[in-house]
Image (cartoon, rainbow, N blue to C red; front, side, top):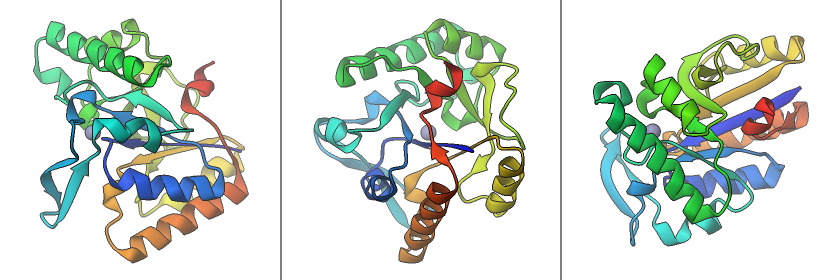
Length: 215
Ligand SMILES: [Zn+2]
């Protein structure tokens, strides 16, 4: 079976997450907003009111994500359906342009901030050159995909039914795809569980890059 994963928001914990992915040879995409990466790392909110979430600084992005794919998460992380469509289009388009300029390769993936999308926004994502747009909807089977710009994952990585959902996909030899934020690993136990999860997945399937599912 095939396996795919992606991680949102370009945060400091991606460094620790990537160490684990590298250990097991796992592939992943990271959904970034280029406006959030400045000369220094910075934090502006706390996860569950306790854990500071840090954005990576711009100068470290290429090193941190070396060997992985980056995907567009817009430039400013807005609610795309709650703004004029022309503004949404600009945010989508410029987010992709700035990523391509920085990383030097074609950016094909997209993830909706807050999972917020509608038909007009999905059309804008396609028009800007993305081969898929990831929602935050969970589905039992990710293929067939009715609309690649409304591409649903099997689940979030902390879904309590993660392995049941995995087993369902495995039984049909399908593709299992999950997403999350690295900062949602808070305790050392969370990180051990995450390591165990990637280890087991890597024994069971073959990691693929998301855009290749749409080739
Ligand atoms: Zn996000």
